[in-house]
Amino acid sequence: MTDPVADFLTRVRNAVMAGHKVVEIPSSNMNKGITRILYDKGYILSYKFLDEKGPQGTIKIALKYDTKSQKPAIKGLDRASRPGLRKYAGVDEIPRVLNGLGIAIISTSRGLMTDKEARREKIGGEVLCYVY
Image (tube, rainbow, N blue to C red):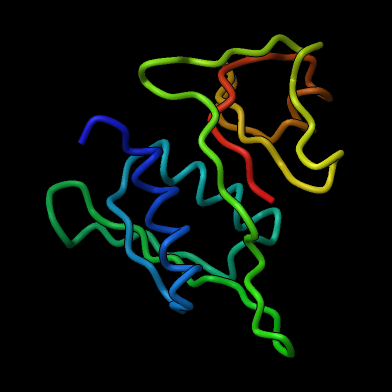
């Protein structure tokens, strides 16, 4: 696999579209960081890091749906930076997703963070994906 972040986003996107409650994803430090951000911002219900399956382990994510309408909390996941075309943004060029309603996940020198946190810390980095 050449792009583990795109694989992560595709597995979550497919599970949401199929209406699954749980999705399993191969683990990596980048995937763990993205999972923590999605949990902190309320896009997923819960997660668990399992180290017994395979050499790298897996991440088990419980997806979040609205209780009444059964609509998913994640409306869209878009990959911004790809291995063939990296997208970097300085602190002044950090994108806003849906005019502040969504989040952009940014890989900085201080770790993974959302666009709002990066603006507050006054630090730029690689724009990995957009979540809304």
